[in-house]
Length: 233
Ligand SMILES: *Cc1c(COP(=O)(O)O)cnc(C)c1O
Image (tube, rainbow, N blue to C red; front, side, top):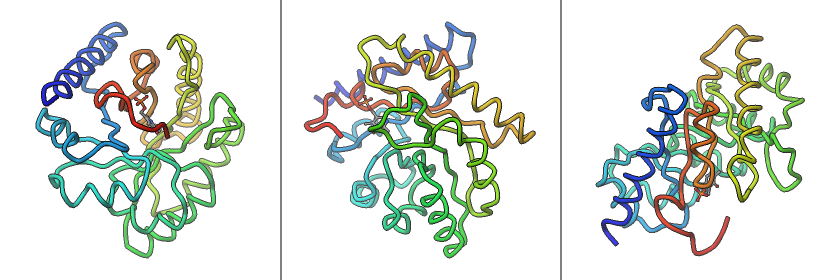
């Protein structure tokens, strides 16, 4: 058991390197976030011992429970839908909120960050495939959303995130990833600012290699490191 997580991590890192090499990207451009939602701290500790430092959770409660009992140099990524009444608890604990999916949420983070004297790094979640079941901005509204977000002085816009559809063949999601990359370039150009779009969080266990080939700078891998989850969220 001990070595399984270690082995999985090594395999995922190798796959990341290969995907980078296949498109002449430097592997240091791609950060692996180990998605540890629903998994016990013992498993996170194993991944930590194997060198992993970035972990992703989709519930504020889990970050609050796990953070105090694990090493302090872990970087926690908030990747799940964030309720406004939980913002206060998480903004000083997550290094990056991937899932800003509405202007109301953005405004709430701005307000709480101002109150705490913080500047909070965020990504805008984009529902590229326009699935009814998914959170996120639609691509058509993104330019005006970015304009509004840039007026908030306590949010630091770093880029975009998407959760691609669940598909049998990762190639089916290539177009989605390519679209997100293109939008990020268009936004950076329009605002004459590359920094606001330096991060593209896309790709999960089933499709991270394809996402990397299309420009991902963060991949979020759960099952591929920790195994299947007991329940699916
Ligand atoms: C659960 C989750 C992941 C990881 O999914 P796997 O298929 O287990 O790799 C990635 N991103 C988000 C937003 C998630 O909720």
